[in-house]
Amino acid sequence: MRFFGPVSIIAAAQLFGTSLWFSANSAVDDLASTWQISATDIGWLTNAVQCGFILGTLTIALGGIADRYRASNIFILSACAGALFNACFAWVADGLCSALFYRFLVGLSLAGIYPMGMKLVMSWAPDRAGAALAQLVAMLTLGTALPHGLRELGGELPWQTIISASSLLALVAALLIYQLGDGPYLQQLMKNNSTKFKLTRLARPAVFEAFRAPKFRAAAWGYFGHMWELYAFWAVVPLLISNTALPQKYPQLGISGLSFCIIAVGALGCLLGGFLSRTIGSGRVAVAALASSGCCALIFFLFWDTLPPIWLFILLMLWGATVIADSPQFSAMSAKACPPELIGAALSIQNSLGFAITIISIAGISALFELTGPESVWILLPGPLLGLLGYWLTLRHRTTGIEKKT
Image 1 (cartoon, rainbow, N blue to C red):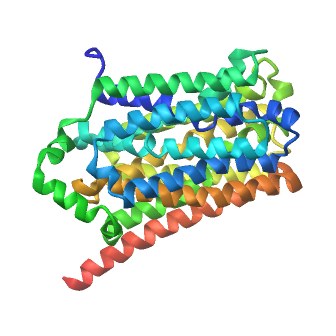
Image 2 (image 1 turned 30 degrees about the vertical axis):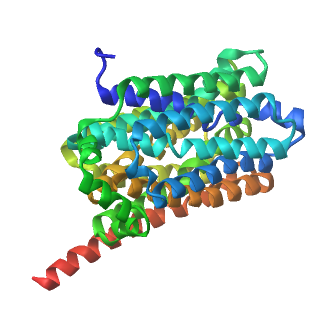
Image 3 (image 1 turned 180 degrees about the vertical axis):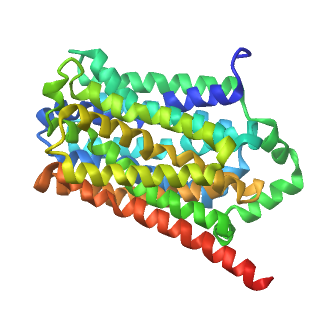
């Protein structure tokens, strides 16, 4: 452990822990043939995870858990529980109903992995939040893509075995955080008795006070618009690929290999965004990424059936790189805009609301896909548009208000 920095260790744990998120999506073809389920049903398997995540983050934030207990302990318990429920999905579920139940429990567990991973980063590196969170979200992106990579590497292995690999990785994540623990920045707050009292008193409804801060509210607007697009895009990547000429053009990769590349390239987008944030700031990086991903969605909608395969692949790779690059920067801006004692709860609330939005967009694009195919991506466009508009108007209102007071 001494050879790696704390942020790198947390990022690795995030990579392994979040591999649980889209483990079911790596087995789309197997599930469709085994349980006779449709693209809409696959969308609801993803939404079951989102629903569990939303309930979990609300419980953690409004119950005061996020800032009253050690983030490392919450992470460890959640990773172990997620590993168990994911294994139950693979080996115990015998149809869509039971599968939805276990995927919901996986989402509930992820509520203690993703937000607590962000809080752990802030506890170790509060002075470089943008770059550190970019590294963390880069690993979340790889974790999302990992099941597709495992499916490609696994070849003819049963889909249950591939999904179980994510459970083993989640246990490794728990072990890494057990060895690391909490960082000194927020750990000091936990040792202070008066702070503990303040955490208990503020962690419930008062956490919404963070939204009174214009900078937090502006970052939240951008984050919510980004979330409308992100998970719906990730959910339909295999479907988009299978309905284009890409599998025939690149048979050596197959649908799983192509899906892995398009999702995993987002890790590079996050790292590049984190590097740029040090010089031009998180706000500019986030806005540029959100605008770029929206442009990619528009171009794909207009030209997906006329672009040559190589250009279509480049477009999807660019979309995959930009669709996630804004996430760590919006989160860093939110974390900096609220008091240290509310970081865990505020980020959990923001996550919860953001993932509630993803349920609508995932359900919408899944249902539309059965009717219109790849052209259904038009439904993702309102996310970047409204996110950018809300971000700009909030900051403009804040600036105008300051000018009026002076």
